[in-house]
Every structure is written in structure tokens, then in C-alpha cells.
Image (cartoon, rainbow, N blue to C red; front, side, top):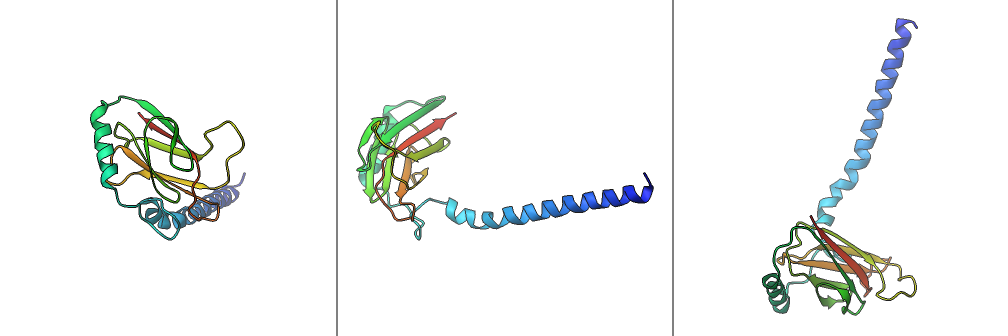
Length: 167
């Protein structure tokens, strides 16, 4: 191969690589500009706050922490009905309002991986469509805040399955 052809191939290769990286950087940078506002606490669209912690919630959380010892590694699972009652699993459920739930555990969950999905407690049927958001509960290290919404973003009561894994 001639030297000028090799130089052209190298120049084209670097140009394509540079454009690919620049294009990818633009595509990635734009959504992240909005992420910090959304990532602070999930909430119904249009609001960005959890309801205040009630005295009952604070008492329940403190009692649960005192009752249990520190866990080295664990996975905690709870299934919650749409009306806020616990179907099975571990934890105490408090329903604040339409689509707003708090699940309190007997151990600190702030360093855990929190995963939730809309689901039913029984073996029947596919659950209704919708959205679910989870976050560590503000001012309560042993609780998780959960919000459920319709696919249009309107708060609604939906049953869910919640998993918290601590490593």
C-alpha cells in the first residue's frame, strides 16, 4: 500500500472515531442534565417531594431498629396490596395517600439496592399497567418510600412487590 493511502485511511478512521465519540457524548450529556432534579426523590409528576414523616412512622421505625440486630448480607421481600396492607413478607407498611406508601424494616436500608415492580399478591391475572418509583425514605434510614402511578402519570393505588438487598 502506498503511504498516502495509509495516511488517508488513518485520518478517516480517527475522524469517524472522533465523530462517534462526540455524538455519543452529546446524546448522553443531555439527559443527564435533567437527572439530578429527578433523582433527588421520585414523586408524582409535577411535584418533587415526599410527604412529611409522621410521628407514628418515626416511632415505628425506631422500634423496628431497636428490635433487630445488624445484618451482614440479606434480601428482604415484601408484597403490598393496593390498599396499603401487607400481603406477605417482612416490614411494616404505612399508606400516606393515593399511590404513596412507606415500608419500614428492622434494619438500615440506605446502602441497599431497592427494586420494586407493580404486582398482585395472588396468583391470578396480570397486574394493571402503571409506573412505580422507589427511594430511601427521607429522615428514616430503615424505610423505603414507594409511589405508584398510572401510565399517564396520575397517582393511583397499585399493589407492588418490593425487594431490598443488602450486601
